[in-house]
Length: 122
Image 1: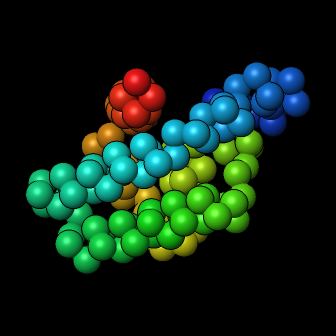
Image 2 (image 1 turned 30 degrees about the vertical axis):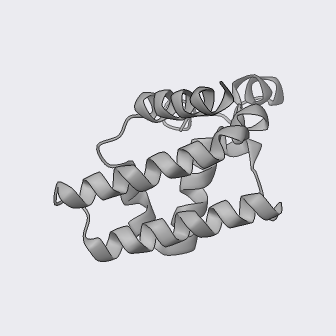
Image 3 (image 1 turned 135 degrees about the horizontal axis):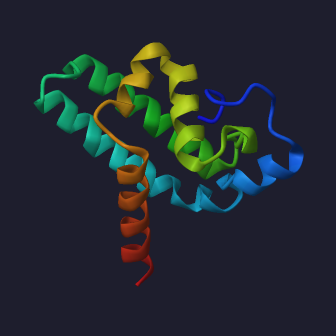
């Protein structure tokens, strides 16, 4: 996410300041639920095939089980919950996983996750 503009790696202080996975990982269920709905919309829009949708959804469900069981390896260098899940999905199912981000801004993703999280909390 950050590598496009910088020629050097971030310092440890800057990396710790900008990471959020240490606290936003609690949004994982909401992030995965939002991703499943989003990929369904991508199928309806003709952007992703039904077969790709099944592959993405199955990969997301596997990741959710790994997180639930404590087996998922969170990586603070990947920045946040969204990028950790997307990275794991792409590693798990290949380039099809990268299609999940199509027509979806990070701001939209964060706004949805936070709304769902707050709704569950109240």
